Length: 385
Ligand SMILES: *Cc1c(COP(=O)(O)O)cnc(C)c1O
Image 1 (spheres, rainbow, N blue to C red):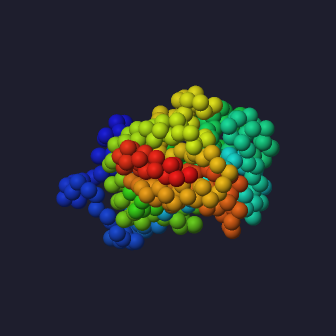
Image 2 (image 1 turned 180 degrees about the vertical axis):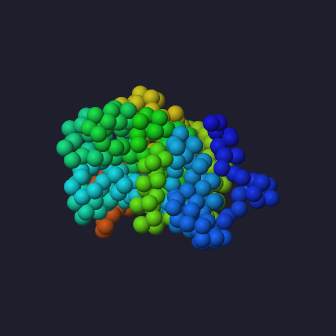
Image 3 (image 1 turned 90 degrees about the vertical axis):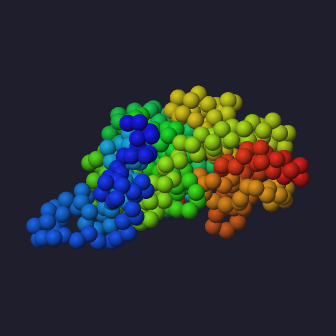
């Protein structure tokens, strides 16, 4: 299916709503039936009909159809946040007594799910360094049912060899889930590499404007339908129709935003990589990265995130550099129009968010601004330290 068709036409029944170009926000919780017979039919098959919005809703269906098509999936199911999608996907693949192998240093709340939430329900988790696929194999136990990937992972952007890990999973009869938020469906398609379920935080690149939250799971029709009647309906972390509408709007411009972000990021990274005060840049798409070849094999492009370490052992200098940036906002998340930094120094040895990463590490996200405007800002902030 062509990308332009997916983003502009797929799932949109314009003749049903006055040929409006933008779909209506069907802001309703309920859908009425005319007869008992009709209601009986609905109840037989709630996952396929419009009956109640914690279930299906026409605006949300448009988003699900487009996301499924973008990932080459049979079906998709939307959630109210990325972590709701991650949690539902993981819970759908485990029961008490099972064992999960998960990549080390995934997204922070995925880490909490694995390390403290699942164990409460008798699910054991082993976290492995995902840069070597054999670590997944060596961690397998007779009761392993799920291998969980996030490639590239958060903050340090290490890759997992997706095809190699899928082969390990298949040989052991395990399922696989990958968090594909970093790469977007434009730049990496794990289902084509044999992964069972792909999850996204739509809050990031899909929405693209830092004004909406959402998540999605893409996979086989049967697997998604099982999630519908279990985790989706019982945990109830549904997307609302207005949020779905904003995400559809975000999708219209996803390719142009990603092109721009990828190109600007290459320019900013090139600038930083020759700067004497920058110690290291972490990004799979830098040629001296040992995983560069794997990145070329399983991804189509870099995106806007990378991490740097500054050459200093003085935390005050990190503070000064970050505080001096005028055009990078200091915030969580990424994927919007605005460039961001997230300094490890903010969570170094403090409170609940204690980080094990070095304090001179700063995560960047490059947004839609002119890259030269950003480079000028980096230049003046680096001069100060
Ligand atoms: C942000 C993020 C999530 C969680 O998404 P929310 O929409 O914030 O719940 C999950 N995975 C990754 C990789 C993320 O960056």
